[in-house]
Image (cartoon, rainbow, N blue to C red; front, top):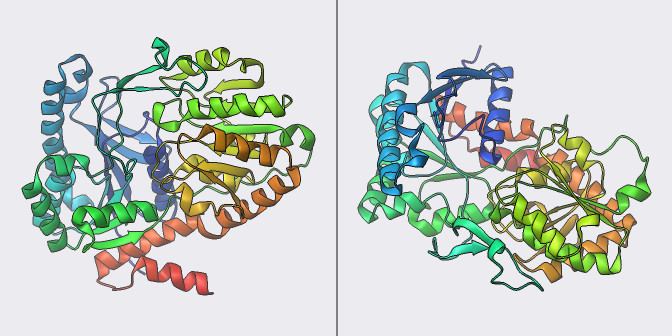
Length: 437
């Protein structure tokens, strides 16, 4: 019987913090365990109330460096950075102590943490995979100006349009490159030495890795996967008239998600289709400002801020149209899940979204921050429910064919087996073989 490699996953944030990377990691860990793989997660303990050792939906979790990170948000920024830097070495030391309990180390995010963990893998003689979460906005790096919500017809200097914090549009490699070219060269050489596999989530992320000097490593394109047992087209055609005029957006209320752009687009939509309704599912730091923006634009009656919801599939089935107005992404789970649920989706041309939506075939793509173009796309589908159903059916078929958790997990386990048994079969080759069958 073939021995299945034991997997250790290092990730800087994990449940109860919930984001795209955390959701995808948990889902993959659950499926790995169900498939007979021994899997554990090692993560930072960002709050003292979180237990050191935990089991989350069947997945063992070890949290570390709580004494360094637990209360750092109250300290000066420079002290926060120093404590986080020390915590990275605590992570490396922990992985070293755990080296006999795993066969493959998987690192979520290609950050500066990759270097000390690669050193551990070098001396422990363990293979390593690194998931590149984000390419950022493919624009100049962090600015010193505070971000502002899109004003549209409002005065752009309106105080409450300002977003707390700086505009951050950098990808995974920002911290590593900020440490200097010497650190980058050492990391690249070390990763080549241990034959690390770089897993990118999208074609844009692959271009980002290549452009930053890591293109000569073993790079595999594996997108996020969808639990199609949960996210599938509605089983009933009831309330089709109501669903045809309802648009659903599942998103955190954060600046980078572009919900302010969506609200500006919705103001224009309401002028032509006042019966249409927008449902925003999720919460976050800019939600009060978004609600204020909706009121200032006079669209409150047609917008529902549904907040956090446990039954996300049920929320998606309230409409025929889904939308994700993000300013940047990696491989958006929310879009994959909406497409898997049979919604006709509109998304901005960002990483991941541009890979899964073929414009005018299974959905519509618009430019980032272009609320006028977004309103036109919304009106196209709101005025043509048959087209929306057509796009939704093709979107769901794509997810079932290429983006199920089972398919994605198969690509990952192929890499694990190759790294631990020396089988030189690339996961990408396997994907091509499957597509040809």
